Amino acid sequence: MYKTSIYPGILVLILVFSGCKLFDGDDEGEQLEAEWSFTGIEQLTISTVSGDCMVQPADDDTLRVDVSYTFPESCFEPRYSHVGSALELQEVFSGVACNGSSHWVITIPDGIDIEFSSASGNLTMTDHQGGLDASTASGEISLDNVDGAIEASTASGKVDVSQAVGELQLSSASGDVDCEGVAITAASSFSSASGDVSVVVAESPSHDVSVSSASGRAVMNYNGNPVTGTFVFTARQDLGTIVSPYTFDSETTFTQVDVIYDLKTFIRGGATPSITIATASGTAELRLN
Image: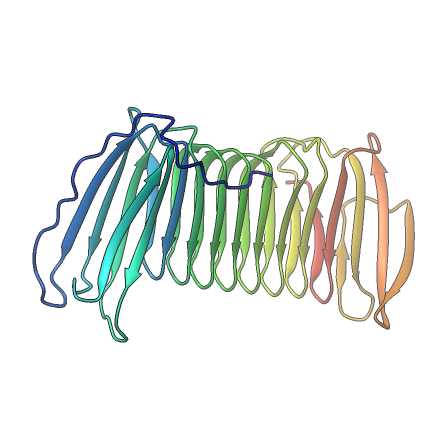
């Protein structure tokens, strides 16, 4: 799984940027803007508090940042810092009360690894090749046509992924995890505590996959592709439900913290990969299409 790193302080690539352009105005509610551009970036870190962030593809090798905000300049400042080929963007607040909003649009070349974090801001990313490590508390994460090692998690927000290729580690505490048209290239997991989890694959996985929800629906949908591998289903015997289009080879139970769980398995077309679909009090389901 891709992990972020910070490059050393020695300038290893030429970094070119344009000066920040701010349109003055101190009244709350007046829109201000900042614009920066860079080349030679390999690592991007984005930290927002409440600002939404849109990441879109560039048609050249220049990374461009456009920030618009209505927070007063007296209590809010968008900042950047760079060391070597690493760039960091962040929102900086001062004072107690600061009313307004902010929106980041980042136009980015392929091949740049991204780390994103926010308290309540949303992340939207389209058409990007590169690693992503994203987390929010109450914001949502939406990814479309992405290729790379992807790790995305929220506390109460939704994770929505469409047309993704790569190793996928997606989770939410109370939100839904919804994936469609994904091609899994390494062991991957999709999970939620109280939300629903739906995974629709673009092709039959050749790597292990785990799909789970504690109290919601955990659904693995093969979308008409061949079903092969070892399939393992678990659910609480008293509260959970297991749904499969195939007859099970083995049905047993196990006890965990004084709770009895059903454990049902079957093998079809070969023992690998291992596909685990699990729930406690919800539904664990395999769908053919």
